[in-house]
Image (cartoon, rainbow, N blue to C red; front, side):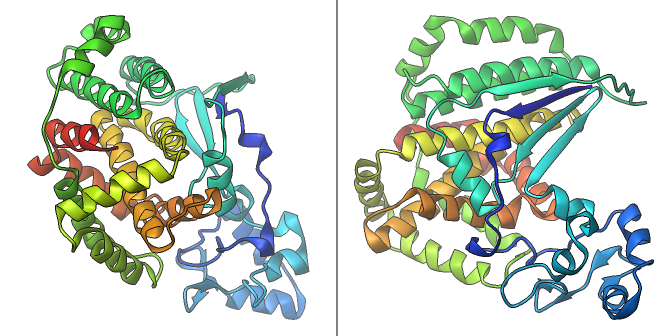
Length: 377
């Protein structure tokens, strides 16, 4: 078994009660079977509380006003306090660590939805390196397209290389990455995956960069972002405050019209020199965690557009925040990213909806994205 993880992965430390948010509220915490059996054997008054605080049919902790039944007033876990670290279920032990599973490979990352992890991800100054280790475990999947997976990992390696090429401006990096995903998807759709290697070679050539520098695509970021926010409105809110926050942002960003939006972006970009770094690190994060999942639905381009759309939305959320105070710190950017991630990444319904809209709706074609990016990323 091969394990792949970003170089900063082991630097993560939970900040517990100092966290500006809590991972024990806003979503259901599912309990693995081993922990459920263990909880059923706990005796005494706390054992009674434990049994009464579990939805045994759903296999999850009950919630009160959106908070886990064991989250106390200090935002600490009573289960951890009473029974120790070993009593935590797998979900609570692992978060914010996340694993994507493929035949013979586990790709491990930190979740952007955790404020401390978001700060670690966005605060990384150097290009992310991906480390590998192996063990003796073996496995086979009955139905797994290993040929497609291999081509996706090759494509992802090149996409990450493009995204981390700091000799190019960010607009160019994003445009090249999206175009590569688009061209690869066409070969998958037309059963011409055998052409993938030649496609990657073409994108590695120096003249490819010059081609994109000269290629001008006209579009409106203002319109694209309004369309993306329309998708957010269709999503299931995981935090009760999210709809209010979302609408306040949309009003501040778009109600003034396109010229005011462009002027705000110009001022914001000039005032935030770290914006390009944060954009790179977010794209690298979303591409690493999502792109190769396209092996399961043959839609890696949809995953790549989800990465780009997520970054664009987080950027606009940051713009809205900057408009209020005319500054934006790393902590504030990490908080902005984690708020988006909690609402989208941790709901299967929301992720499926986003990918479906970006794949099927003609408003979100490659030209729309490239035009918006080239206007201002």
